[in-house]
Length: 232
Image (cartoon, rainbow, N blue to C red):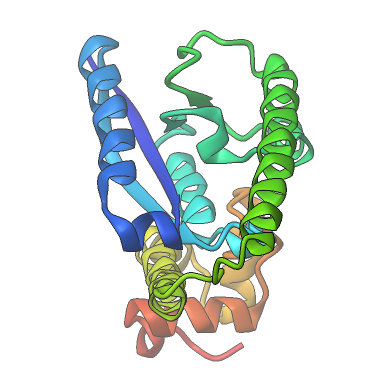
């Protein structure tokens, strides 16, 4: 019987504004893996962001949603096509590993030791630093030649990132809605009681922290369930 799998795709706003090829390449890599390794893709989450400051769960609503979906599917793994699509920051990946987050990179295989992932991430991080240095040198050389620097579609890229951030919050609300209903069915009648139930199950809130009454209320509004739950 195929095992459940959640996929997480990530592109930055500039990549997505130029074309959808980077996103499709990730999707195809995961699809090939699913076909060859007896997994069943149960959910897909797509993150579009600027990249700067993105190595924190509060800047990754779709990643939080993916981890929540994995938790609701018996803690199934979250797959990325390449490790750098999860993050190039070794500390960020180390924190996820320490928290027991179930993920793996298709390029490394499902059997890769999670404890080795921070090491792989360190190598990717070093590669990123090298690329950054080369990019800075290339831009400085272009400026010295009198070239006009900038990206004419930057405003569009920012708009795309903002839209996907909102979509990520909506997606997270949709993913955790069944858990909210289960908490109510189990006897939770107030927002505080629902928050306690979710914290007890180990389901992280949208920004990676603990649930509070107001956090539950916000998610309920997005999921269209606000009238079904009593006040704190």
